[in-house]
Image (cartoon, rainbow, N blue to C red; front, top):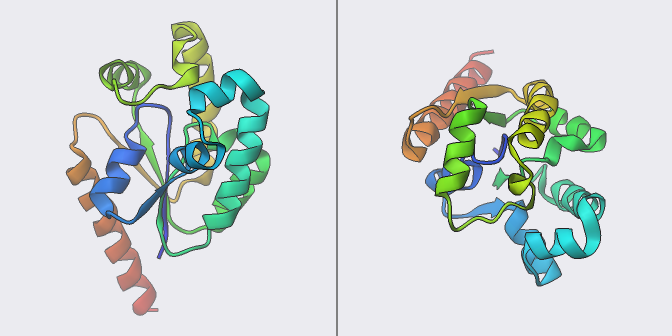
Length: 170
């Protein structure tokens, strides 16, 4: 059964995916591999719209596979992506308040996010725009708060097990 992780930048999608399985797909990493350049460079050279097109193509390629997928924070920007995600029964929204997520982004020196350097007001506007879309596509929401990736992974696996039991009891 697939698990697709959505959420704003800094919510820990990739880190939680790693805690769930070593065999996960990180859409941002796939884009970097396919384009042979960093996302930051791709944004600079091609713009956000082209990046979103590529992101959508890769989502469509893997969305129905039996795999854990860490999406990019903007995956919900596309109406087509939201429709695809709503067809999947295992979309987990890693939520958090904006200040916590901004602090996490600042602490993460390994992940350069092209949109994270646009100032707090721009980040806040993106966060507020995307939040209802994350909620719209999610089957399960977890507040990342001060939980470790392992704790979040355990909660996701417990939710999966509960769902499976309910299905088996029908």
